[in-house]
Length: 385
Image (tube, rainbow, N blue to C red; front, side, top):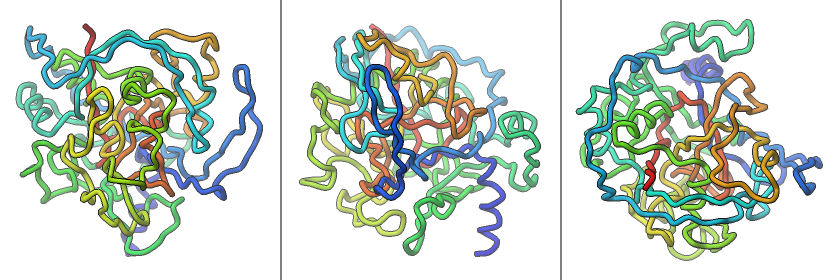
């Protein structure tokens, strides 16, 4: 146990980890007035839901791989057309965090979107065709990594700079929800082919969402497939599923009421899962009901990459009269990690819990460094007409 803690203390200051969860009980917040465009709201400063660990490393090994669209096939099989529309984007209820304010009018053009998250079978086809090597399969480059660290940050031991990724390991008892090193483990050999580390495989999991995917990996797949990542505005419009100002893709019924609606963590995180939804970790795609557009898993299962850079202040910079097809800020900014470029991720994961993380809310924003890849991070694609 002492060795595990020692390794965790060494590696976590250097790994771009998507905390992707938040202990949202009232005691974790401090309240302060903050001005926003046209209104004043209360700023909730969470002690544990922000990603405040520096970037892992930038992918470099794939720079020479020539990835091109797989062909001239313009088929939109396994995709759904989302019609153009206008909606109010952002905060929907009292659980909203500061970066979800102000709620603002957005119009988007129509687009195609994958019915489900990209699966292991689909990603395997891409890798076979291109020879692509994912970020998690590469050894970190300290010369690149240190540029995103505070000046004077010491180099971690070479034994830790290995091809690896973060996997979820439940605790055996209640632990502080502010110390995510107690349930995330930096595991050598963990990647999309070995989602929980060496010895684990994709046998029987062809229809599960591919995970341990970085932003760069998702971009490469999209290019090969002749698609792209959704903008944050497109993602939220699609997730709302024809509903107006509702909290979840299915409406306003609480996640814990009625029949299971998404793959999330039920019980006491991170040590006890009641399995009400039947799944302890990942679930096959489309295991739960679709939203109003026929899209599956827009809540829970895995977090999904968006194209937009993340800026905690972005919504307040938009025209209060409305904006069309926003593509995010031109520069990333996270006050917790001002040196680390980040992208938006959406939708929550199998680890989200009402007392710890409400990532399955359609307005919930999260961010992570572009090189992050974890056991609950995947993506889906979109395409223009």
